[in-house]
Length: 157
Image 1 (cartoon, rainbow, N blue to C red):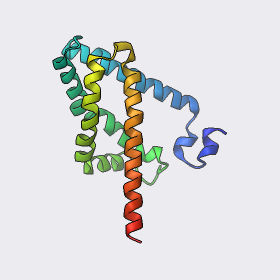
Image 2: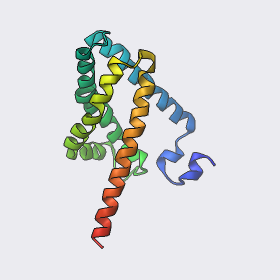
Image 3: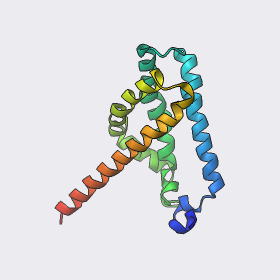
């Protein structure tokens, strides 16, 4: 079964698999550049606790909230199939409305994770490590948001 059959009518399902492959490759290269090139130039290549903390803070408080998450929210209406109903600015307004949650809660996970990323994890494994942590984080967020929406809908019945 191909992606289009799995979710008919969904905008993400109609995207050509080669486009998705290129998007994933671009994301991988972008994260590699930020973690292994830009942060090394800005903070040095040392793996000391102080340098790791600077890099973790730069990712959690600058790169992610000002670059990564806004790009996702700008694309979110298209990803969810709301083309024509909602546009990039609608996604950015949603991000702006929930900024405090999008800013502080992930930092509680990502700062400790990135302390390991920039102090212990070898440079060539940083993106794979980050992807692994991201799967765990997204699974947690999905599970908790689903359980909280289920409990609120069952209590309102």
